[in-house]
Length: 245
Image (cartoon, rainbow, N blue to C red; front, side, top):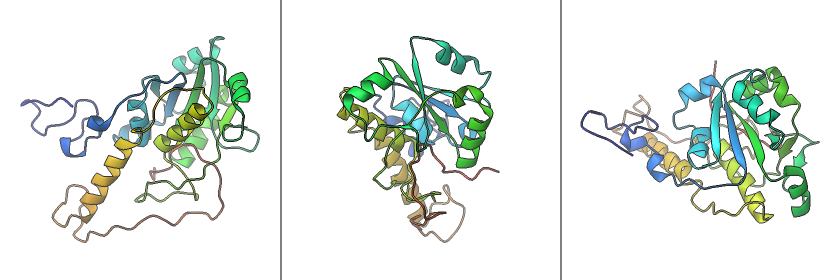
């Protein structure tokens, strides 16, 4: 993080957040064979400077963020999709998807190919569904998913389903599945560190009595979001963490 005397609030030049809440100093980007493309809704891009889609991007050298709602005519998305040397996939839940959790190494190799691009919708559930409904080009590409067996560490955000994961946790799970099947050769030991540090900071701000920067209220109480909007369980691969209007 670079700061100087011309930046009175000591903001990070990457995320433009104050030094106290900046997570960039905790990032350590890894190189993956797989290219991850975060298709980010404009509301997510503008509102969530410390959103986990941004964090995942900072942790991946072979990744990019494309901001839009309807990607049908998006130049960069179509450039990737129309390149015959690429194999493109959408990480999205569904029964007929290619399930990375149960496929063998040979099946993964055959299906994903040598230069896979994995597209991830980054937004709330309603926003992501809208993005997919409008983006006819994304509807045509194969989908991949995984069986999630862990609970999200995002304890201060209410999830719509049990066993939901944030974007960075989902990418972390996918990379580990690829590593287990010899399709990737990288370490994910510190991949979630920015996410964990952000949660530590948020919890500290909520519990600290004299801190009014994070939430302008006198009563500070941490309510763990262990209740879900529905009882059913399903796989989820993008981040439903904001309430956009």
